[in-house]
Length: 633
Image (tube, rainbow, N blue to C red; front, side, top):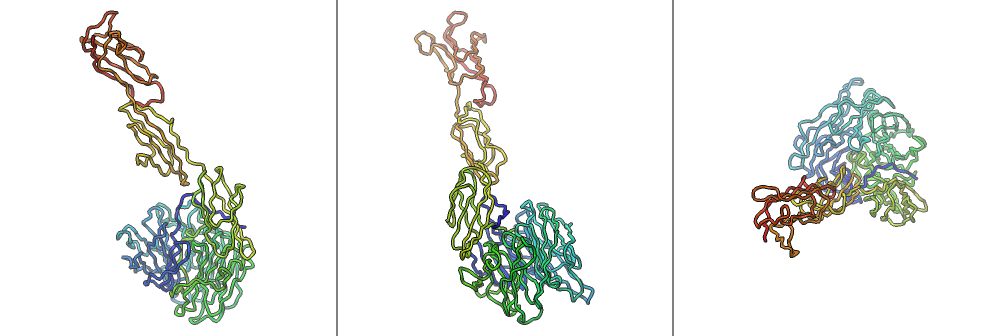
């Protein structure tokens, strides 16, 4: 059983930057639907070794390169996209990495081959970078004037990348030639830090012309960024390291030396859970068909680089690159030479499973189940991608917010007869392929998926969090608002999205009209909550005439209104400005007399001051009324 430390947001975030591949001799694969499909739509690129391809998070193709040329999504060359200086014979000549500070910009890293002048001296452009601006040409992009900017001279033929621990920045890792040093470059929102983190560990990579194969072979990060592995073809070695994706330091070297004559380690790849490591061994010498078979090994990293399992050996072919895809499977490039090619890829269908149970070229009990390329060819390798883009858990879930139903989906259903889900909350198990489950309480739960195949059981566990709903609560269900005033309704701070019944999307809205108002908030986990409030607008009614004749109708002049929690003053003046009545009781009106004598008919001036005492009424300060009333006798 593997307990997988995947980070997974509850938000329906798409991770399809690596969902389209272009590589080899005009070959391609589309993973966007969840099922790999061969592509035959590009006829412009041939990449003897790795290419690099980037899509947006929704899987829309942006551009691709073989390290010399850059093509846009319409399969046309980008302006300035023909002068990149990667060497086509390099194992990993190029890699595309986004800039976290602006989603429109991308770095293309390229590696030039070491060129020996004689047995001792050599020269090379080494590791360089160029910049692509996708805002240009209406979103088709240009390679900018920042082309072939030098970083490190000289380097081995390998480069890889993974996300920083913060989940935003990226580390780009290369290995210096004639040294034991790894160089890790950080790309964050501020751009690329040109001062690398240098780690001296592991084998010395270098030498004279006869030792140049020490630069050959692949280097990969584990998808979770915890480990780094590489093949050193010239030394017949596979090396494994710890990687600190916060500091960029490489440490704790482990080594395996292959001992099969005539073939050397070449391709490298980790399983999705990072607990298995795969390598190909092939004959790199000679221009014709290989005289020695190629092998593919699996290492169980819980045991270190010891006792690898040989999954298969193939005569007459070179098994070269391995690359994990977003469907949870590892694909293997295969060819005879650069001229004699094969139009299919080998596949490790269940790379998390141990030994031969990983089902190399075995699908639904059918051996030899390679992946067809529809008449296109893979040559020696596949796309080189940021490894974090394939950090896909064994199953995904659409949302885990308290009270919401959550649907689980298996990432890779290959070679699985039936399944069993344990949701970690004591509820009955489910045998559904895509179960829906609701958690009774917020909290953390280990969800266990057991897959059964050929009478064996394979289990993966992922810890998920059922998040409490965000807090949103207005002060009361009803708010009284005096006419002409306004109130600020606040839905709470710190949420990622706000939606109001008015269409507003800010955290605060100003309200002056009567009505029912609701707000919906969404937090960083895409959990939502809603509250509503009724705003009642009211005013006091003051008559413009009264008849104090004792008939019980309009005998007093007073302020009419339901709200009584106030400090109140009403003052009456005659036509000469003399005060003839004053009261601090809203229910005590003027009866039309002054000092016990009836006042004559006519117009009188009044003034009312209202100071609201309670917190359940909203005004823009004290209310002051002025006007005239007609006394009729």
